[in-house]
Image 1 (cartoon, rainbow, N blue to C red):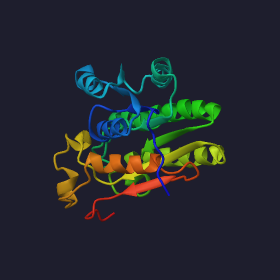
Image 2: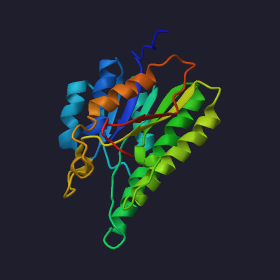
Image 3: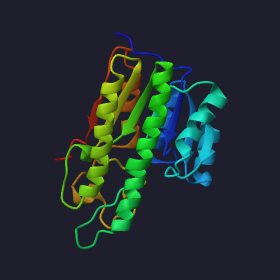
Image 4: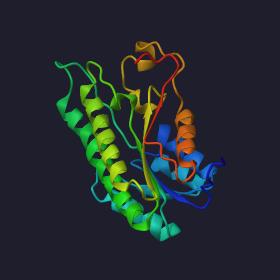
Length: 240
């Protein structure tokens, strides 16, 4: 069976200035989609938008107005919106005695509150138009836990739970929702860690952002009757 063409569709990508978000934006542009990209740093997202011919919104994803502004920008500039890549995220881990709870709460605002706002804003629009795809970038840690990472796992479990409930609500319509669940990906997410998890977990060949982007493309190009609620992607050495 042939895969579906996405040419002419419009996608919004959050956290698009690096890592998975940037790789997915490039993949989608190559598939013929028009893009609306958002990130906090104009210095970083500006050249990317210029390269990809994308619309830009420089903003903090925790600003409650951002999801509506992103959707409005897509509709005003391109007249439609078909896909949202709900990707912006943060990580804070640590043992009980030293973890910074204020930083944990900041992570929750990004990974849960902001991600929920994006998901609801776009799925409401997709439900009204009868088509669309929400892709939430979760994590393998949205299905498992390990010591010192319970709070981070909790944020990803939350997005998994929301996604499953939303999938049930829109079943039988043209709207799809997917959680992409990567293992260790070589991005800036762990740049401040004293020991990078690829070293600590002995994963010399981690996933690259392009690996995740190809999987997102796979999900989006399935025939209209196919749903992929979850797609886990792991490096071969990842024992989890």
